[in-house]
Image 1 (cartoon, rainbow, N blue to C red):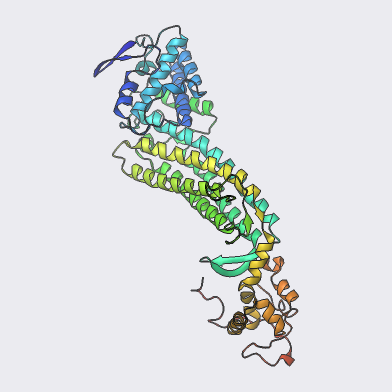
Image 2 (image 1 turned 120 degrees about the vertical axis):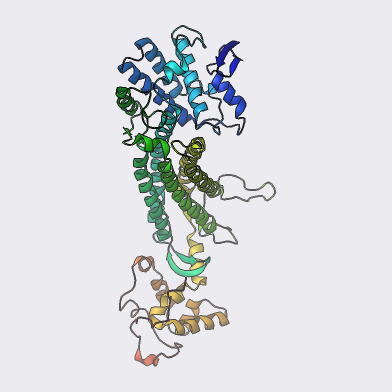
Length: 502
Protein backbone atom coordinates (compact mmCIF):
# COMPACT_ATOMS: atom_id res chain seq x y z
CA UNK A 1 0.00 0.00 0.00
CA UNK A 2 1.00 3.64 -0.40
CA UNK A 3 -0.29 6.70 1.39
CA UNK A 4 -1.57 9.87 -0.25
CA UNK A 5 -2.89 13.04 1.32
CA UNK A 6 -5.25 15.84 0.36
CA UNK A 7 -6.93 18.70 2.19
CA UNK A 8 -9.24 16.24 3.97
CA UNK A 9 -6.53 13.97 5.29
CA UNK A 10 -4.52 10.87 4.36
CA UNK A 11 -5.66 7.59 2.78
CA UNK A 12 -4.10 4.26 1.86
CA UNK A 13 -4.11 3.09 -1.78
CA UNK A 14 -2.82 -0.07 -3.48
CA UNK A 15 0.85 0.45 -4.27
CA UNK A 16 0.48 -0.22 -7.99
CA UNK A 17 -2.75 1.73 -8.53
CA UNK A 18 -2.49 4.48 -11.09
CA UNK A 19 -5.42 6.38 -9.63
CA UNK A 20 -4.95 8.44 -6.48
CA UNK A 21 -6.70 9.81 -3.44
CA UNK A 22 -9.10 12.08 -5.34
CA UNK A 23 -10.33 9.15 -7.41
CA UNK A 24 -10.64 7.00 -4.29
CA UNK A 25 -12.85 9.55 -2.58
CA UNK A 26 -15.02 9.85 -5.71
CA UNK A 27 -15.41 6.06 -5.84
CA UNK A 28 -16.63 6.14 -2.25
CA UNK A 29 -18.85 9.18 -2.70
CA UNK A 30 -20.64 8.23 -5.92
CA UNK A 31 -21.52 4.50 -5.90
CA UNK A 32 -24.51 5.32 -8.09
CA UNK A 33 -24.89 3.56 -11.43
CA UNK A 34 -22.23 0.84 -11.47
CA UNK A 35 -21.34 2.09 -14.96
CA UNK A 36 -18.14 3.62 -16.27
CA UNK A 37 -17.09 6.51 -18.44
CA UNK A 38 -17.44 5.86 -22.16
CA UNK A 39 -14.11 4.91 -23.79
CA UNK A 40 -14.48 7.64 -26.43
CA UNK A 41 -14.67 10.21 -23.65
CA UNK A 42 -11.59 8.85 -21.86
CA UNK A 43 -9.70 8.84 -25.16
CA UNK A 44 -10.75 12.42 -25.89
CA UNK A 45 -9.82 13.60 -22.40
CA UNK A 46 -6.40 11.96 -22.69
CA UNK A 47 -5.80 13.91 -25.91
CA UNK A 48 -6.83 17.12 -24.17
CA UNK A 49 -4.24 16.45 -21.46
CA UNK A 50 -1.59 15.65 -24.07
CA UNK A 51 -2.34 18.86 -25.95
CA UNK A 52 -1.98 20.86 -22.75
CA UNK A 53 1.33 19.16 -21.94
CA UNK A 54 2.66 20.07 -25.38
CA UNK A 55 1.48 23.67 -24.97
CA UNK A 56 3.18 23.87 -21.58
CA UNK A 57 6.36 22.53 -23.14
CA UNK A 58 6.16 25.17 -25.87
CA UNK A 59 5.80 27.94 -23.32
CA UNK A 60 8.59 26.62 -21.10
CA UNK A 61 6.36 25.69 -18.18
CA UNK A 62 7.21 21.98 -18.48
CA UNK A 63 10.63 20.53 -19.15
CA UNK A 64 10.99 18.03 -22.03
CA UNK A 65 11.33 15.03 -19.72
CA UNK A 66 8.10 15.59 -17.81
CA UNK A 67 6.18 16.83 -20.83
CA UNK A 68 7.30 13.82 -22.85
CA UNK A 69 6.33 11.37 -20.12
CA UNK A 70 2.92 12.99 -19.69
CA UNK A 71 2.29 12.90 -23.45
CA UNK A 72 3.39 9.25 -23.64
CA UNK A 73 1.10 8.31 -20.76
CA UNK A 74 -1.76 10.14 -22.48
CA UNK A 75 -1.08 8.20 -25.67
CA UNK A 76 -1.39 4.92 -23.78
CA UNK A 77 -4.67 5.98 -22.22
CA UNK A 78 -6.00 7.11 -25.60
CA UNK A 79 -5.13 3.69 -27.00
CA UNK A 80 -7.39 2.08 -24.41
CA UNK A 81 -4.71 0.94 -22.00
CA UNK A 82 -5.23 1.36 -18.25
CA UNK A 83 -9.02 1.36 -18.71
CA UNK A 84 -9.37 -0.49 -15.41
CA UNK A 85 -8.00 2.58 -13.60
CA UNK A 86 -10.93 4.82 -14.57
CA UNK A 87 -13.32 3.95 -11.78
CA UNK A 88 -15.36 7.07 -11.07
CA UNK A 89 -19.08 6.87 -11.69
CA UNK A 90 -20.25 9.03 -14.62
CA UNK A 91 -23.02 10.49 -12.44
CA UNK A 92 -21.02 12.63 -10.04
CA UNK A 93 -21.17 15.98 -8.34
CA UNK A 94 -18.69 18.72 -9.11
CA UNK A 95 -19.35 19.34 -12.82
CA UNK A 96 -16.87 16.60 -13.78
CA UNK A 97 -14.06 17.37 -11.33
CA UNK A 98 -13.79 13.73 -10.24
CA UNK A 99 -13.34 12.63 -13.84
CA UNK A 100 -10.71 15.29 -14.43
CA UNK A 101 -8.82 14.20 -11.31
CA UNK A 102 -9.07 10.55 -12.32
CA UNK A 103 -7.36 11.47 -15.61
CA UNK A 104 -4.79 13.64 -13.88
CA UNK A 105 -3.84 10.92 -11.41
CA UNK A 106 -3.68 8.05 -13.89
CA UNK A 107 -1.59 10.10 -16.33
CA UNK A 108 0.72 11.39 -13.58
CA UNK A 109 1.35 7.97 -12.04
CA UNK A 110 1.90 6.32 -15.40
CA UNK A 111 4.26 9.13 -16.38
CA UNK A 112 6.16 8.53 -13.15
CA UNK A 113 6.52 4.86 -14.06
CA UNK A 114 7.81 5.79 -17.52
CA UNK A 115 10.40 8.00 -15.81
CA UNK A 116 11.55 5.10 -13.63
CA UNK A 117 9.76 6.25 -10.50
CA UNK A 118 6.91 4.90 -8.37
CA UNK A 119 3.27 6.00 -8.36
CA UNK A 120 2.62 8.60 -5.73
CA UNK A 121 5.99 10.40 -6.02
CA UNK A 122 4.17 13.65 -6.64
CA UNK A 123 7.00 15.82 -5.46
CA UNK A 124 8.64 14.98 -8.78
CA UNK A 125 5.57 14.93 -11.07
CA UNK A 126 2.13 15.69 -9.70
CA UNK A 127 -1.43 15.36 -11.03
CA UNK A 128 -2.25 19.00 -10.28
CA UNK A 129 1.09 20.77 -10.57
CA UNK A 130 2.09 19.21 -13.90
CA UNK A 131 -0.66 17.20 -15.64
CA UNK A 132 -3.38 19.75 -14.85
CA UNK A 133 -1.08 22.78 -15.24
CA UNK A 134 -2.95 25.88 -16.54
CA UNK A 135 -6.22 23.94 -16.77
CA UNK A 136 -9.56 23.60 -15.01
CA UNK A 137 -12.24 20.94 -15.10
CA UNK A 138 -14.50 23.66 -16.47
CA UNK A 139 -12.58 24.03 -19.73
CA UNK A 140 -11.05 20.57 -20.21
CA UNK A 141 -14.18 18.49 -19.46
CA UNK A 142 -16.51 20.16 -22.00
CA UNK A 143 -13.66 20.18 -24.51
CA UNK A 144 -13.28 16.42 -24.15
CA UNK A 145 -17.04 16.03 -24.58
CA UNK A 146 -16.94 17.97 -27.83
CA UNK A 147 -14.09 15.86 -29.20
CA UNK A 148 -15.79 12.57 -28.28
CA UNK A 149 -19.10 13.74 -29.72
CA UNK A 150 -17.48 14.80 -33.00
CA UNK A 151 -15.90 11.38 -33.43
CA UNK A 152 -19.19 9.63 -32.77
CA UNK A 153 -21.14 12.00 -35.02
CA UNK A 154 -18.80 11.17 -37.88
CA UNK A 155 -19.37 7.45 -37.29
CA UNK A 156 -23.11 7.97 -37.07
CA UNK A 157 -23.20 9.94 -40.30
CA UNK A 158 -21.47 7.09 -42.11
CA UNK A 159 -23.88 4.56 -40.61
CA UNK A 160 -26.89 6.69 -41.57
CA UNK A 161 -25.59 7.02 -45.12
CA UNK A 162 -25.35 3.23 -45.32
CA UNK A 163 -28.91 2.80 -44.05
CA UNK A 164 -30.19 5.36 -46.54
CA UNK A 165 -28.43 3.56 -49.38
CA UNK A 166 -29.91 0.20 -48.41
CA UNK A 167 -33.41 1.67 -48.41
CA UNK A 168 -32.72 3.23 -51.82
CA UNK A 169 -31.70 -0.18 -53.13
CA UNK A 170 -35.00 -1.60 -51.92
CA UNK A 171 -36.82 1.35 -53.48
CA UNK A 172 -35.47 0.30 -56.87
CA UNK A 173 -35.99 -3.41 -56.26
CA UNK A 174 -39.63 -2.97 -55.26
CA UNK A 175 -40.55 -0.37 -57.88
CA UNK A 176 -42.79 -2.82 -59.75
CA UNK A 177 -44.75 -4.08 -56.73
CA UNK A 178 -48.16 -2.41 -56.38
CA UNK A 179 -49.64 -2.53 -52.89
CA UNK A 180 -52.28 -0.91 -50.76
CA UNK A 181 -51.43 2.37 -49.07
CA UNK A 182 -52.96 2.91 -45.65
CA UNK A 183 -53.92 5.92 -43.58
CA UNK A 184 -54.88 5.57 -39.92
CA UNK A 185 -54.21 1.82 -40.38
CA UNK A 186 -57.11 1.57 -42.83
CA UNK A 187 -57.00 0.83 -46.56
CA UNK A 188 -56.50 3.99 -48.58
CA UNK A 189 -55.09 4.25 -52.11
CA UNK A 190 -52.55 2.17 -54.02
CA UNK A 191 -48.86 2.93 -54.39
CA UNK A 192 -45.79 0.83 -55.03
CA UNK A 193 -43.75 -0.83 -52.35
CA UNK A 194 -40.78 0.97 -53.89
CA UNK A 195 -42.43 4.33 -53.25
CA UNK A 196 -43.01 3.36 -49.63
CA UNK A 197 -39.36 2.43 -49.15
CA UNK A 198 -38.34 5.55 -51.05
CA UNK A 199 -40.13 7.65 -48.44
CA UNK A 200 -38.07 5.93 -45.75
CA UNK A 201 -34.89 6.70 -47.69
CA UNK A 202 -35.87 10.34 -48.12
CA UNK A 203 -36.43 10.80 -44.40
CA UNK A 204 -33.04 9.26 -43.71
CA UNK A 205 -31.39 11.60 -46.21
CA UNK A 206 -32.60 14.52 -44.12
CA UNK A 207 -31.24 12.89 -40.99
CA UNK A 208 -27.90 12.32 -42.70
CA UNK A 209 -27.68 15.98 -43.66
CA UNK A 210 -28.70 17.22 -40.22
CA UNK A 211 -26.15 14.98 -38.50
CA UNK A 212 -23.44 16.25 -40.84
CA UNK A 213 -24.33 19.91 -40.29
CA UNK A 214 -24.73 19.77 -36.52
CA UNK A 215 -21.04 18.92 -36.16
CA UNK A 216 -20.41 22.59 -36.87
CA UNK A 217 -22.08 23.52 -33.58
CA UNK A 218 -19.50 21.85 -31.35
CA UNK A 219 -16.23 22.45 -33.19
CA UNK A 220 -15.39 25.46 -31.03
CA UNK A 221 -13.82 24.40 -27.73
CA UNK A 222 -13.45 26.33 -24.45
CA UNK A 223 -9.93 25.01 -23.82
CA UNK A 224 -7.79 27.69 -22.22
CA UNK A 225 -10.67 29.45 -20.52
CA UNK A 226 -9.84 27.76 -17.19
CA UNK A 227 -12.49 28.18 -14.48
CA UNK A 228 -15.05 30.58 -15.99
CA UNK A 229 -13.73 31.41 -19.44
CA UNK A 230 -11.50 34.37 -18.58
CA UNK A 231 -8.31 32.35 -18.89
CA UNK A 232 -7.34 33.37 -15.37
CA UNK A 233 -4.30 31.38 -14.25
CA UNK A 234 -3.15 30.42 -17.73
CA UNK A 235 -0.48 32.15 -19.87
CA UNK A 236 -1.86 33.82 -22.97
CA UNK A 237 0.43 31.85 -25.28
CA UNK A 238 -0.68 28.59 -23.68
CA UNK A 239 -4.32 29.42 -24.39
CA UNK A 240 -3.61 29.80 -28.11
CA UNK A 241 -1.30 26.82 -28.42
CA UNK A 242 -3.41 24.28 -26.52
CA UNK A 243 -6.27 24.32 -29.04
CA UNK A 244 -3.78 24.10 -31.93
CA UNK A 245 -2.16 21.01 -30.45
CA UNK A 246 -5.55 19.41 -29.80
CA UNK A 247 -6.54 19.97 -33.41
CA UNK A 248 -3.39 18.19 -34.55
CA UNK A 249 -3.78 15.27 -32.14
CA UNK A 250 -7.43 14.59 -32.92
CA UNK A 251 -7.46 15.32 -36.64
CA UNK A 252 -10.62 17.36 -36.09
CA UNK A 253 -11.18 20.91 -37.39
CA UNK A 254 -11.32 22.36 -33.89
CA UNK A 255 -10.92 26.01 -32.99
CA UNK A 256 -10.84 27.99 -29.78
CA UNK A 257 -14.21 29.53 -28.98
CA UNK A 258 -14.31 33.26 -29.58
CA UNK A 259 -16.23 33.83 -26.36
CA UNK A 260 -14.77 31.48 -23.77
CA UNK A 261 -17.10 32.67 -21.02
CA UNK A 262 -20.09 31.69 -23.17
CA UNK A 263 -18.56 28.35 -24.12
CA UNK A 264 -17.90 27.56 -20.47
CA UNK A 265 -21.27 28.62 -19.08
CA UNK A 266 -23.75 27.49 -21.73
CA UNK A 267 -24.55 23.96 -22.87
CA UNK A 268 -27.11 24.78 -25.57
CA UNK A 269 -24.91 23.46 -28.43
CA UNK A 270 -25.21 20.01 -26.86
CA UNK A 271 -28.98 20.44 -26.68
CA UNK A 272 -29.04 21.28 -30.38
CA UNK A 273 -27.02 18.21 -31.30
CA UNK A 274 -29.16 16.04 -29.06
CA UNK A 275 -32.26 17.49 -30.71
CA UNK A 276 -30.95 16.37 -34.10
CA UNK A 277 -30.43 12.90 -32.66
CA UNK A 278 -33.96 12.96 -31.25
CA UNK A 279 -35.34 13.81 -34.71
CA UNK A 280 -33.39 10.89 -36.16
CA UNK A 281 -34.72 8.66 -33.39
CA UNK A 282 -38.27 9.69 -34.30
CA UNK A 283 -37.69 8.57 -37.89
CA UNK A 284 -36.13 5.30 -36.77
CA UNK A 285 -39.06 4.67 -34.45
CA UNK A 286 -41.55 5.30 -37.23
CA UNK A 287 -39.70 3.25 -39.84
CA UNK A 288 -39.05 0.30 -37.56
CA UNK A 289 -42.70 0.31 -36.50
CA UNK A 290 -43.85 0.40 -40.13
CA UNK A 291 -41.65 -2.55 -41.04
CA UNK A 292 -43.09 -4.58 -38.17
CA UNK A 293 -46.60 -3.83 -39.39
CA UNK A 294 -45.84 -4.60 -43.03
CA UNK A 295 -44.28 -7.93 -42.05
CA UNK A 296 -46.94 -8.81 -39.48
CA UNK A 297 -48.55 -12.20 -39.51
CA UNK A 298 -47.24 -13.65 -41.64
CA UNK A 299 -50.41 -15.70 -42.20
CA UNK A 300 -52.95 -13.49 -40.47
CA UNK A 301 -51.37 -10.02 -40.66
CA UNK A 302 -50.42 -7.68 -43.47
CA UNK A 303 -47.47 -9.79 -44.59
CA UNK A 304 -46.49 -7.65 -47.58
CA UNK A 305 -42.78 -7.96 -46.81
CA UNK A 306 -40.58 -10.61 -45.25
CA UNK A 307 -37.93 -9.66 -42.71
CA UNK A 308 -34.80 -11.79 -42.32
CA UNK A 309 -35.34 -14.62 -39.84
CA UNK A 310 -32.62 -14.24 -37.22
CA UNK A 311 -33.63 -16.29 -34.19
CA UNK A 312 -36.41 -18.33 -32.67
CA UNK A 313 -39.11 -16.06 -31.36
CA UNK A 314 -40.73 -18.10 -28.64
CA UNK A 315 -39.93 -20.65 -25.98
CA UNK A 316 -43.39 -22.18 -26.30
CA UNK A 317 -44.60 -21.53 -29.87
CA UNK A 318 -42.57 -23.58 -32.38
CA UNK A 319 -41.67 -21.84 -35.61
CA UNK A 320 -42.46 -18.35 -34.38
CA UNK A 321 -39.99 -15.72 -35.61
CA UNK A 322 -40.18 -12.18 -34.26
CA UNK A 323 -39.10 -8.87 -35.86
CA UNK A 324 -36.28 -8.53 -33.34
CA UNK A 325 -34.14 -5.94 -35.13
CA UNK A 326 -36.97 -3.41 -35.63
CA UNK A 327 -37.91 -3.95 -32.00
CA UNK A 328 -34.33 -3.33 -30.90
CA UNK A 329 -34.15 -0.19 -33.04
CA UNK A 330 -37.43 1.08 -31.63
CA UNK A 331 -36.18 0.72 -28.07
CA UNK A 332 -32.98 2.57 -28.92
CA UNK A 333 -35.05 5.37 -30.43
CA UNK A 334 -37.12 5.68 -27.26
CA UNK A 335 -33.98 5.79 -25.14
CA UNK A 336 -32.51 8.57 -27.30
CA UNK A 337 -35.66 10.65 -26.96
CA UNK A 338 -35.54 10.16 -23.19
CA UNK A 339 -31.86 11.15 -23.13
CA UNK A 340 -32.69 14.31 -25.02
CA UNK A 341 -35.28 15.27 -22.43
CA UNK A 342 -32.80 14.70 -19.59
CA UNK A 343 -30.04 16.58 -21.41
CA UNK A 344 -32.32 19.51 -22.18
CA UNK A 345 -33.31 19.89 -18.55
CA UNK A 346 -29.71 19.52 -17.39
CA UNK A 347 -28.55 22.24 -19.77
CA UNK A 348 -31.31 24.56 -18.66
CA UNK A 349 -30.50 24.02 -15.00
CA UNK A 350 -26.90 25.17 -15.36
CA UNK A 351 -26.25 28.16 -13.13
CA UNK A 352 -24.20 31.27 -13.71
CA UNK A 353 -20.72 30.52 -15.10
CA UNK A 354 -20.75 26.69 -15.15
CA UNK A 355 -23.16 23.82 -15.60
CA UNK A 356 -23.00 21.57 -12.56
CA UNK A 357 -24.96 18.87 -14.41
CA UNK A 358 -22.47 18.52 -17.26
CA UNK A 359 -21.77 14.86 -16.34
CA UNK A 360 -25.42 14.06 -17.10
CA UNK A 361 -25.17 16.01 -20.36
CA UNK A 362 -22.07 14.01 -21.26
CA UNK A 363 -23.49 10.60 -20.44
CA UNK A 364 -26.81 11.32 -22.17
CA UNK A 365 -25.29 12.67 -25.38
CA UNK A 366 -22.59 10.02 -25.73
CA UNK A 367 -24.98 7.21 -24.91
CA UNK A 368 -27.40 8.42 -27.58
CA UNK A 369 -24.61 8.64 -30.14
CA UNK A 370 -23.28 5.17 -29.34
CA UNK A 371 -26.72 3.58 -29.33
CA UNK A 372 -27.73 5.20 -32.61
CA UNK A 373 -24.47 4.26 -34.29
CA UNK A 374 -24.81 0.59 -33.38
CA UNK A 375 -28.56 0.38 -33.96
CA UNK A 376 -28.22 2.02 -37.37
CA UNK A 377 -25.55 -0.46 -38.41
CA UNK A 378 -27.50 -3.55 -37.43
CA UNK A 379 -30.72 -2.12 -38.88
CA UNK A 380 -29.07 -1.75 -42.27
CA UNK A 381 -27.12 -5.01 -42.34
CA UNK A 382 -29.23 -7.44 -40.33
CA UNK A 383 -32.69 -6.25 -41.35
CA UNK A 384 -33.25 -3.88 -44.27
CA UNK A 385 -30.66 -5.43 -46.60
CA UNK A 386 -32.43 -8.78 -46.31
CA UNK A 387 -36.03 -7.62 -46.73
CA UNK A 388 -37.95 -9.26 -49.59
CA UNK A 389 -41.34 -8.45 -51.04
CA UNK A 390 -44.26 -10.86 -50.82
CA UNK A 391 -45.58 -9.93 -54.24
CA UNK A 392 -48.44 -12.43 -54.21
CA UNK A 393 -49.70 -11.06 -50.92
CA UNK A 394 -49.42 -7.47 -52.14
CA UNK A 395 -51.44 -8.35 -55.25
CA UNK A 396 -54.04 -10.22 -53.21
CA UNK A 397 -54.61 -7.32 -50.85
CA UNK A 398 -54.86 -4.80 -53.70
CA UNK A 399 -57.58 -6.92 -55.31
CA UNK A 400 -59.47 -7.24 -52.02
CA UNK A 401 -59.16 -3.60 -51.07
CA UNK A 402 -61.02 -0.46 -52.12
CA UNK A 403 -57.91 0.82 -53.87
CA UNK A 404 -59.43 0.43 -57.33
CA UNK A 405 -62.46 2.43 -56.23
CA UNK A 406 -60.38 5.50 -55.45
CA UNK A 407 -58.56 5.18 -58.77
CA UNK A 408 -61.94 5.28 -60.56
CA UNK A 409 -63.26 8.41 -58.85
CA UNK A 410 -61.84 10.88 -61.42
CA UNK A 411 -63.58 8.96 -64.22
CA UNK A 412 -66.89 7.98 -62.65
CA UNK A 413 -67.35 10.34 -59.71
CA UNK A 414 -67.39 9.72 -55.98
CA UNK A 415 -71.11 8.91 -55.63
CA UNK A 416 -71.17 6.51 -58.57
CA UNK A 417 -68.14 4.62 -57.32
CA UNK A 418 -69.69 4.44 -53.84
CA UNK A 419 -72.75 2.74 -55.33
CA UNK A 420 -70.57 0.32 -57.26
CA UNK A 421 -68.66 -0.50 -54.09
CA UNK A 422 -71.89 -1.09 -52.19
CA UNK A 423 -73.14 -3.37 -54.94
CA UNK A 424 -69.92 -5.43 -55.03
CA UNK A 425 -69.95 -5.79 -51.24
CA UNK A 426 -73.59 -6.85 -51.29
CA UNK A 427 -72.72 -9.58 -53.81
CA UNK A 428 -69.62 -10.52 -51.84
CA UNK A 429 -67.31 -10.18 -54.83
CA UNK A 430 -64.25 -7.97 -55.45
CA UNK A 431 -64.95 -4.62 -57.09
CA UNK A 432 -62.98 -5.55 -60.20
CA UNK A 433 -65.11 -8.65 -60.69
CA UNK A 434 -68.32 -6.67 -60.26
CA UNK A 435 -67.17 -4.01 -62.73
CA UNK A 436 -66.36 -6.65 -65.32
CA UNK A 437 -69.71 -8.32 -64.87
CA UNK A 438 -71.42 -4.95 -65.24
CA UNK A 439 -69.53 -4.26 -68.43
CA UNK A 440 -67.83 -1.19 -67.02
CA UNK A 441 -64.22 -2.34 -66.75
CA UNK A 442 -62.42 -5.51 -67.78
CA UNK A 443 -60.00 -7.25 -65.45
CA UNK A 444 -57.18 -6.31 -67.80
CA UNK A 445 -58.26 -2.67 -67.73
CA UNK A 446 -58.43 -2.74 -63.94
CA UNK A 447 -54.90 -4.10 -63.87
CA UNK A 448 -53.82 -1.32 -66.23
CA UNK A 449 -55.28 1.30 -63.91
CA UNK A 450 -53.24 -0.20 -61.07
CA UNK A 451 -50.01 -0.57 -63.04
CA UNK A 452 -46.81 0.54 -61.29
CA UNK A 453 -46.16 3.27 -63.85
CA UNK A 454 -49.53 4.85 -63.01
CA UNK A 455 -48.66 4.78 -59.31
CA UNK A 456 -45.44 6.65 -59.99
CA UNK A 457 -47.12 9.17 -62.26
CA UNK A 458 -47.90 12.44 -60.52
CA UNK A 459 -51.65 12.95 -60.95
CA UNK A 460 -53.66 12.05 -64.06
CA UNK A 461 -54.26 13.62 -67.47
CA UNK A 462 -57.28 13.82 -69.73
CA UNK A 463 -57.49 10.63 -71.73
CA UNK A 464 -55.90 8.43 -69.08
CA UNK A 465 -59.21 6.63 -68.57
CA UNK A 466 -60.72 6.78 -72.04
CA UNK A 467 -58.80 3.78 -73.33
CA UNK A 468 -59.80 1.45 -70.50
CA UNK A 469 -63.40 2.33 -69.64
CA UNK A 470 -65.72 0.04 -71.64
CA UNK A 471 -69.09 1.22 -70.37
CA UNK A 472 -70.73 3.60 -67.97
CA UNK A 473 -73.64 1.47 -66.83
CA UNK A 474 -74.62 1.44 -63.20
CA UNK A 475 -73.16 4.90 -62.71
CA UNK A 476 -76.07 6.72 -61.11
CA UNK A 477 -76.57 9.86 -63.20
CA UNK A 478 -74.39 8.61 -66.03
CA UNK A 479 -75.62 9.03 -69.61
CA UNK A 480 -76.78 6.09 -71.67
CA UNK A 481 -73.98 3.53 -72.32
CA UNK A 482 -74.53 4.11 -76.03
CA UNK A 483 -72.85 7.46 -75.59
CA UNK A 484 -69.54 5.63 -75.03
CA UNK A 485 -66.87 6.39 -72.49
CA UNK A 486 -66.89 9.77 -70.91
CA UNK A 487 -63.67 11.75 -70.53
CA UNK A 488 -62.22 12.14 -67.05
CA UNK A 489 -63.53 15.12 -65.18
CA UNK A 490 -62.44 17.12 -62.21
CA UNK A 491 -64.50 16.02 -59.20
CA UNK A 492 -67.00 18.54 -57.89
CA UNK A 493 -66.42 20.18 -54.57
CA UNK A 494 -67.17 17.67 -51.85
CA UNK A 495 -66.31 14.66 -53.98
CA UNK A 496 -63.25 12.52 -53.52
CA UNK A 497 -60.72 13.30 -50.84
CA UNK A 498 -61.61 16.56 -49.17
CA UNK A 499 -59.33 18.62 -46.96
CA UNK A 500 -60.63 16.87 -43.85
CA UNK A 501 -60.27 13.35 -45.20
CA UNK A 502 -57.27 11.24 -44.24
